[in-house]
Image (tube, rainbow, N blue to C red):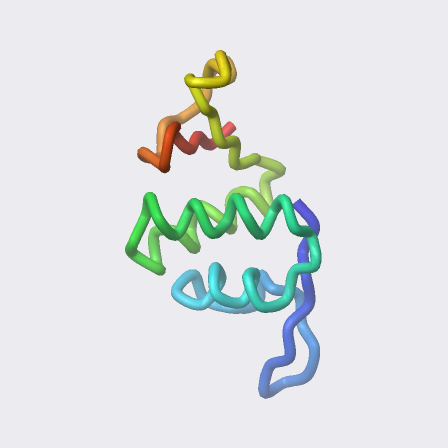
Length: 96
């Protein structure tokens, strides 16, 4: 996942300089990667706590993990060793 930069009181910094509580919102406002923005929006649906959603997003950014939306109606199955995060419309969101 590409790490966008954000404007802070100390100048432009990588998004990871923000606390977990602000990470999702910062990503949504500063990323230009449409597919990643869509997945992060789904993350905020399945995990309503900004702190917990931010911790998951931080894992994606710093540890190379990915969010994956799976739609069983399209004959999609979760990737091997995926962690279920929650239900989304017509499917589920996983962390790989």
